[in-house]
Image (cartoon, rainbow, N blue to C red):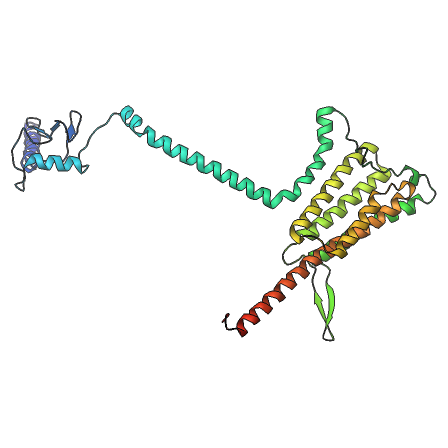
Length: 339
């Protein structure tokens, strides 16, 4: 037992002796005991607590391992960041506060500018769909005022009570509802689902609808208008009056939005398209009375035809632009301007 204790003591003494023998006289690890500033005196303590040196070297002239003055090495090590300076967390937080505030301000400014830019881009690209908010007007009236929405006096909704009382009411209402098929045909044509045949040079060539390649939403909106119109007029014929008044705003909201989308994508209509559309709106605005179903059916056909004509106006403008660009390129090639 005594031998084991003596062996442990001997081993511990050997380890301590080795550590002391192989520890260099200078260590770059510095513990700052005061405010360290190159313009003031600051005491830095090494691993050997018996030796204290000032930062600028007034208290020592000892040499390091490579013959360099220790005070110079201390100054260089401290300025190069080798010093293990311990700063209070509170002082560090206060010192970094301006930087954090500047970063937060920059981040907030960037988020604000990005939000404004995104909102402006969304408005420029989606302004045409704002009239669809008319569909929310019946909900607003019911939730806020507690009453059902009614149509304005300057644009009243026609009622089909007189038609429903006639002996041929089923035939009249059925034909009136079937007139919405014109929107289905126009929408399928504009989306390219219905092909068109053209003869060029004695050969029949099959083309696609005007809006398939670049603007399929043209046909999609026409199909949506036809579906909403069918539901609206069906409820108008057999449904309660307050439900018809609510669907009136839905029908007009999607119709106006579709008009603005065609205007944004196809530009101003041609004379032919303008003539078709004006004739349809005139029939729509006339107080029809008992002839409402007949005149409104004609409006369905004219408005559906106007959408196809308007989309073809866009295609014709594009063709004219391409032909004009080709002629200009040929002219430049003849003049030697274009390679």
